[in-house]
Length: 139
Image (cartoon, rainbow, N blue to C red; front, side, top):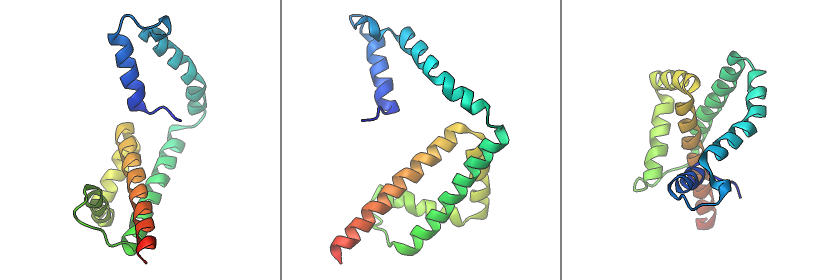
């Protein structure tokens, strides 16, 4: 499977803390190897202008807003679940012009917020998928 960022960081922390680890577990070596593997990605990134990348992120954000609008029309959510509460917050936020504009700006300009938005979108997509499956079973 794929290595999550969380598992990578946990493993890196264990390597740093455990001096008896194998030589391949040298944190400096791992970070240097990671930097070497990132070079081709960075080179590709440099071939795309900043405005093109912002446009791509903006289009993704707009698609997320459309998804929230479509999902809200289709599903009645259980208010006891934390995920349902987050999704309801997304529905409300996606209808508020000021929230939409503000999040559109910050999610395009600040990578950390863009990543957070991507995570929320993925979680909500999974929730909608689970809700669809539940509804199919009940009917």
